[in-house]
Length: 103
Image (cartoon, rainbow, N blue to C red; front, top):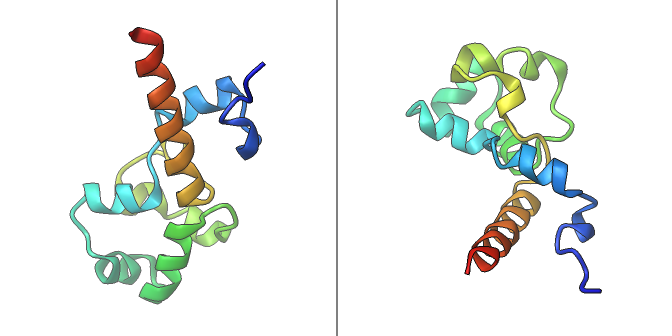
């Protein structure tokens, strides 16, 4: 049986489907038209700190988490919290699977 491409990310199909309806912190920021420095000012953090959160958001502080909805205008359940690179890889692999299944 072929290895499930999401297995190396410890994700099951249900988690992948849920995640397909989420966006990254970076995407949320870009969607509202803010630069990293502008968003960092709104969060009252340094822009390099925001860069780290955007790259890997699985351990953002509660104070930051609580401000996301008001700054970005999107509920936190629609934000993916985790490593941005792993998210992109898993989503790309899932899309290829879905396209292959359709053909």
